[in-house]
Length: 514
Image (tube, rainbow, N blue to C red):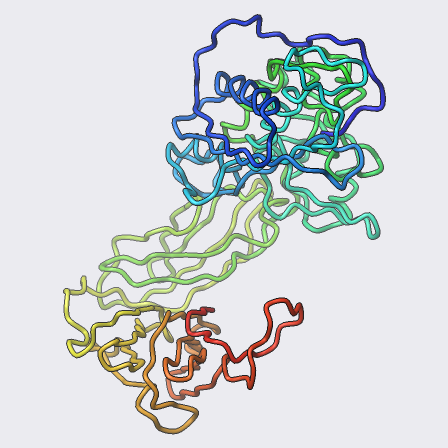
């Protein structure tokens, strides 16, 4: 939030009246460099949100007191992380800020990071008396913190704007983004990203479409701050300044706070909008028909197959409602809302292919046909290699065959096992010398795998450590060939960590991974 351009007579816009409010959540604040008087103000703001935000998961807040380089900035906040497609997510395609995601999931989805990170400008002219009565030249820290916690809890967009080209981007749309509407009813989160179309939307009329927010605003869609000249840090993630500057109890989430202005509650409009974000936003207006699904794969099961795919590139604007999965052998079509999907009732030993189409209200995409698969009976547990402890193990599918790579700490060798014709074919591929760049050094460290190509043209890439030279090695594996190289660690000298342009180093990189 920024300092306002005017000052007002000291007033308390939303007094709690000193009443004891039952806590709906627990906040745990880590203070960095805060003076004692400021901690008192922040704890009061935290108590306000603890009485208004429902969550069974403690909300960790990391707050830092320091001088800001941005002119007029009083404070800023961001979530510690974003999550999508978690259990109990109202909309699996949206990215929920940590605190809101945890509240919906009923568990901590990221125990290593705080849910909210807040910066407060120590150079602002603050009321340090803890009396809630700033003068016409002072700013109220508790009000700023109530505002910033609102952002951290979910009242924010993940948009960005390129002022030179006019492009707008929303790579990970939040529920807040999904509830923002253009005048024609399209959702902000559904526009192509990046695009000039989205850039124009970020600098035009935007309003809130959630039913609870509309009801709290007297039946009128709350107007969002989106001036025709984009303002970083203010645009889109606030209520409109001109509309709500004098709205008293509902003015908290405007982009600026005037000197002497005081808030002690979130206000009914903000709380209603936060409640909207706990439900699935209504579908937007579908534009065109969906493109083909992407990265289609079918995994073998026992009398079944697991179909996995990525949504079409235009999944936002096309508003995909479902996916048709056709068994090309039987002609039977089933419908799914998301990937993966398990097709049952197949015959072991029989070959199948599947066609996948994306559907919306305007029509159906062109089908994408899978590679053929043959279901098999459930595998029995078996020891693949009793000569290895397989301390480091990775797995993948190589040309539609199960593939495992592992390093034995007993022998220091890199081995692979490929399931072919009902048996595991085991090979020592590195650590015993040989051609094509192999080494006879003992191998170890973390083992990483990635694959490229599709169908019968897949390539496996393995990354692992040489414990003698402390190098990072790379193996390239296909059905018929293998090659090996040193990726890093074999330079004549160690590169300083202070050098921006990174080159090969001579340091120990066996702990590295790819």
